Length: 310
Image (cartoon, rainbow, N blue to C red; front, top):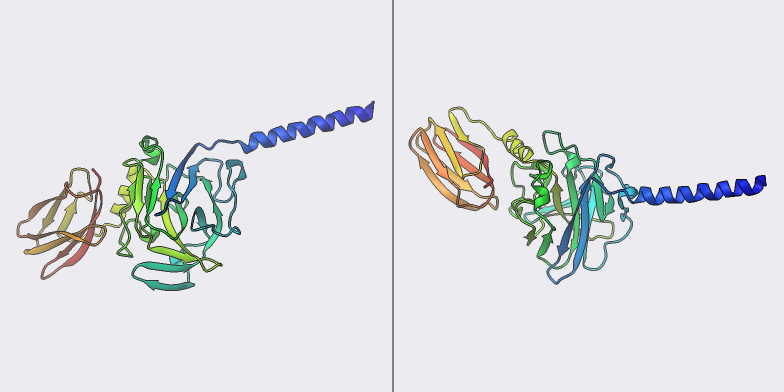
């Protein structure tokens, strides 16, 4: 009788453990969404991003994450979330450089199609644990990216969330390549397209793997990051640094002063000669993004940046 009771207990325990494992494996993260990718000839792939207070920066199988690091990139199109061991621009193992690409050695520690991480929504600035690196193995450009719903990014925790090919070494300070494009905010559109991804790394199979960059952020985090990198010149001021109506004011005691304004692609969009203490420049007809004010006179030269968000 004791043997039967023990056997029943063991079977019941085993069933409970199996049920618990299944239940544990089906945990739904606090927030999760997909990014659908398509290359120039119609190949498609999908990754999932999100956050949860119980997630880690590593592989969490309870959220469906699987490490594909040792699985070669397949076919001619494969997209993965990758986690760098260190920031590539600090690496001494740089293989080369050109105007159109930065080639770094493979600094990744794992690859996955799903990455849920612990995102501190109250932290005042964009931090390393809010940035996600997206590896793209692509032979046919352009790359189209889409997501299901812009409305899920209208809440404050995600309002400033973005996708860009702009390397996060200097978010958002200066462009390190003329091919870097304006960040795309998820609340504004449900799709975007990239003709070129200027930052790459070389993996163990000698494949060139291009990079995109994603970050969860509030609107204020984006604004703060611009203001943090805003250089102040005595007796010269451009304000506001962030505008929703395109109006930027220039106050100066230097005459004459020339201001050349460039967009994020490095194209000059306006030249203004200032001969009065207070001048207004209207960029409302330009698209959202960063603009660079190159300011010079006989006595000064400076570069300052502003952000237009309509």
